[in-house]
Image 1 (cartoon, each protein chain N blue to C red):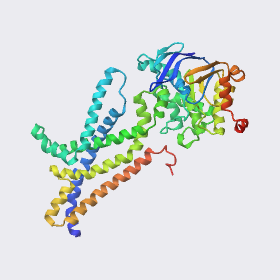
Image 2: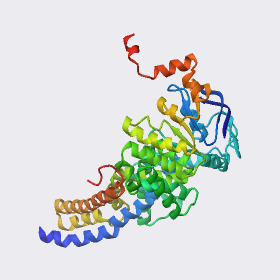
Image 3: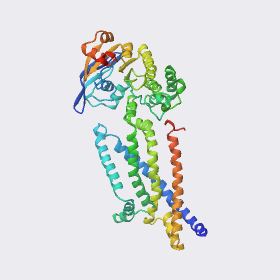
Image 4: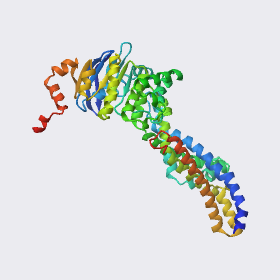
Length: 231
Length: 251
């Protein structure tokens, strides 16, 4: 058994480092940027100024549609449409790019709701206090509201990130040789499905455990100001 | 002087300020009194544009604004610069230290150099007896301490007027006294203040002017002496209604 593990481990770790982890990290970064933008568009009330108001309402409709679309369809179907479907519309993407686009859009849709709820959890009182001191909306967001919202959003965003790491296994279905795909190939050679898939599960668990540690570290850092947090 | 003229504010069709006009003099302490839900807080918040009345005007010596007209960012900035609000629940920024709570606004909004804002903040903190708390976070302090800091935060913007919305209602009597002493001192220094309060003893001792609001109307606008010593029937009822008196229990 140990022999089988030792012979298959290098290929799996290499697939993890080459595809699983980069896919997760890159997609999460893009997803997060998309999520923050989407959440802000949905969160900030349109100004009274008509020049800004109508374009803002259009952006809002786009944001609503985007979140609806990606939360209402399975991730696997989204990946298939992007990789196998778009070429018929003349858009040919490499598997890796297709996967990054699919994962980013999917994560962005879910995470935008997380961020929006974190923004909503900061009381109106904080906005009033900032406005009486003559902060603009942007300054209030940057200095007061976002730092408080980040703390609230961290645990659910960590959920999304950990979820994404595991969802990268779906990239095997669009021809990416990520870790799970490699474990399937190994199984085909050594006929040890229990061992190979357990090994893959174990490697996913290691990555996710490291992320959990990162989450705890970030939670401590962003909770400095909360009563009892230093205990 | 701040002059409000013909101010009307509605919430869901119901008028909470009914065509109200009132002046707040410079260098004086004006105390706004009245039962709960009378429109006191709405009146105070209108001065700082935290509430936007449907109609009426607000004017300072050098600037005025019609609430019914669209308000530009520049106008709103200039009006808000005149006043700073102290809230019932102090609303300090929990993510910032005590010092940053006081310095962030002058730094960000007025672009005052950091060195200057910190010096001013430390000076204000020592005036309210909290000099050694500069690097703590608000959550580590008592309500009374937090309210004193929020007064420093308002003063740091060097506004012409400090607006205080029931600044001691959320404090127990001992902490309340700490805050009231500071307000009394500010009042003696001729800081222009407009205070909404339920503390009659305090109102009596600091007020240069009393405004009594009920049901969105101003029922009294004048000197404290007249208000407390020669009250109308309604004011007498209000004053006796909020003072504890055993004779009422026996009835």
